[in-house]
Image (cartoon, rainbow over all chains, first blue to last red; front, side, top):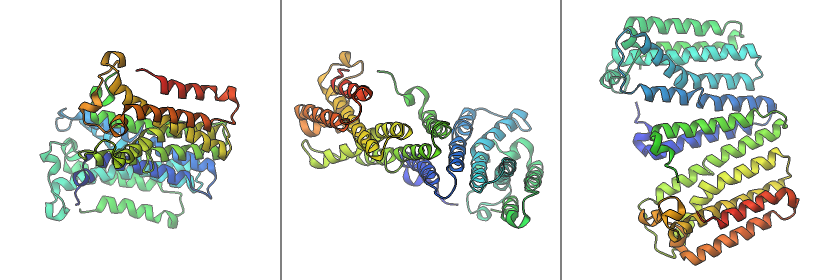
Amino acid sequence: GKPTNHKVFGEDIAILASVALMGLAVKQTSSSTGAPPERVLRAVQVMAQAVGTEGLVAGQAEDLAGEGMSFEENDEAGLEHLEFIHIHKTAALLEAAAVVGAIMGGGSDEEIERLRKYARCIGLMFQVVDDVLDVTKSSEELGKTAGKDVMAGKLTYPKVMGVEKSREYAERLNREAREHLRGFDSDKAAPLFFLADYIVNRQN
Amino acid sequence: GKPTNHKVFGEDIAILASVALMGLAVKQTSSSTGAPPERVLRAVQVMAQAVGTEGLVAGQAEDLAGEGMSFEENDEAGLEHLEFIHIHKTAALLEAAAVVGAIMGGGSDEEIERLRKYARCIGLMFQVVDDVLDVTKSSEELGKTAGKDVMAGKLTYPKVMGVEKSREYAERLNREAREHLRGFDSDKAAPLFFLADYIVNRQN
């Protein structure tokens, strides 16, 4: 647990840092030499899409729109709202990272799509696990304040589906993520299997 | 004079809109078909650079750093601070617009550089003229509140060099801008000459 960027440097500088990093990412990728320019262009497009109105921006707008809205436990609308936010804010960035790698490495369209789906699963899984840890671990175990989500009245997976169902959901996402990796060379895909297991089993 | 984005929609949504627009610009350019991909990549790079640490972000950081600093009239450090901000915040974006056009149109490196310099001149000129209008025109003539800069204690060209010198500086930037256009087909460059004259002569 470390204090966030905007707490340390102020909101104004944190926003500038985010713009600078997006610029650097695009600049760095677009100056890649060695890869065919068609691939590089496609990779840059994927990155731009992930932060834009089909990705991060959509998720954050939904998140802001939900402030002050109240969802009951086991509320279907609450789950939809929560998934929309996490798919667009967290999973979209993981998807872009996986897809950019697949494109630059010369993957087929089918391989690219399978890696995208794998990344979406582990992105959502990360959020489910994070929400569960917040309500089941002590601050000492987490290395950051536990129970923050509940205190902030935040919509979480344990809130909309309970802790047990959330755990099952994380396990299901892990199985799905692994299925999307089938067919890839198992040695080469080993780090991706490991990453999924690491995310679902982490304790802090 | 229209109210700014962040006044109408709130800061949070205005920031998201800016991120969305950057994403769309990169996505749109990177999906350009018809132009050779090497050119498109170079154009995307220029855009990313203009908003990043060598452009907009640097200018805004300098602007924020200057808040609360006080500069005397005719202060050389004040002029440097002011020019750094405008070169990075305003001129860098105009430069990128001109350079992207030059690259996509297949300009030579020398032509691209001349258009970059032209754009930098009219970008700075825009700010000089804006500052002069703020202190020499009424709110009615401007269509927005006059004297705002002075009231806000903002560093401006009239403040660091006086109104007359500011006007001369704008004229000099216009002459320089026009010089950078020499050698281009005069019919094709006509809109650029017109744009420079329009900026230097505008009254509101």
